[in-house]
Image (tube, rainbow, N blue to C red; front, side, top):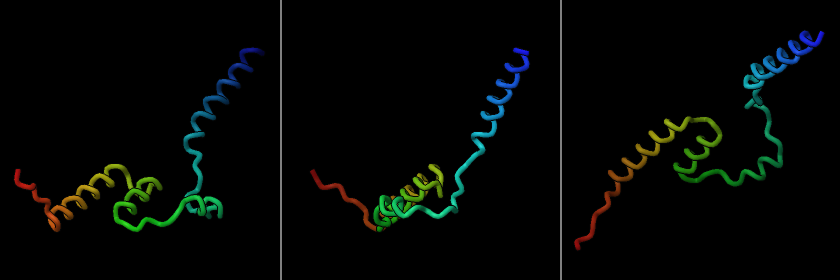
Length: 86
C-alpha cells in the first residue's frame, strides 16, 4: 500500500515536471491597461526598437547582435570618425 502511494506521488511529480515547461502564456492575449501604462513610451530610435524587440522576444540575441553590427557599419560608412592629430 505504501509502495503504491509512493509510486503515485513520484508519477505525479514527474508528470508535473514534464508538463510545466510546456505550459505557456498566450502571447496574443490582450495586455492589461496598467501594464501598458508601466511600459512607457514607444522607442524613437532604431537601437531602441531593436532593444524592445529583443526584450519582448520578437528577435533572438543573435539576430539582435547582427542587426546592431550592421547598424554600426552603416553609421561608420555614413559618418566616419577621424582621429585627431597628436
